[in-house]
Length: 135
Image (cartoon, rainbow, N blue to C red):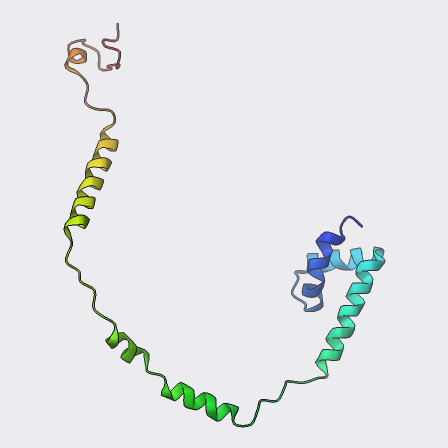
């Protein structure tokens, strides 16, 4: 069916009760009409039931003791931080030049293409166009 491509990714979420009620009803309605999706839903239910009875796997002997020993042997976060080199916070000449260039660029773009020319100032108009006087 056309909607199978949309419903199939939702089947596992439906089986895990992770869909909002509207989505769950949509999956149920589609599965009631579509035999392929109903079969996948049934297979998912059987798999989930089979896995439910297996229980958690057993950890190897001594696993917890080895894990605790490894955790205790690791250096603390404070010790790691003390080993890091402190950064040199003095500004370099390249950084100073870059900031100066950025300031010039930003101020130039804020001012626009430039200041009005002298030819526009005697026109008596408060608006001056780049082509000359606004007559």
